[in-house]
Amino acid sequence: MRSSLAAWAFVAVLFGPMAAGALAEEFRTGNVVVSDPWMRATARANFVAPVYFDLTLEGVENEVLLRASSPDAGAVELRETGDFDGVLRSVRVDDVQVPPGRYRLDDGTIHLAVIQAPVLAEGSSITVVLEFQNAGELVIVVPILGLRAADPRPPL
Image (tube, rainbow, N blue to C red; front, side, top):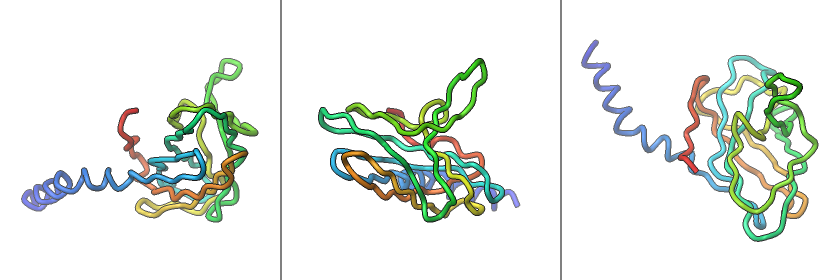
């Protein structure tokens, strides 16, 4: 039993960096670049599941993320996490103003929320369509990591 665990540990160490590198996806439309999208698996259907990614707006013009959708879910919302009336919560926003630069969408900021989806299993993916005011639609494929996965993206 012990040698079996040691063998698996060796495989994880050997191939772990490749698995993390597999998330290094980049999607582009116009001057908008979305990189390293990811989300955690869900344990049950219709669970609200956040989607995170890095967003780069190249050039000098502002952009607006108008909405998101998915053929794999009933709805996708734009959300902001913050302190609202003394309570930390995630609330729906109508759109997201994006000035030029690079931004990380994660737990404490703007992110997407997949709603009314089936169980999302580790190792699968979900397609999300982002709609920008000027750049138009951008289809991204979001890999689904484990239920307790840590953010796999390299630091900004």
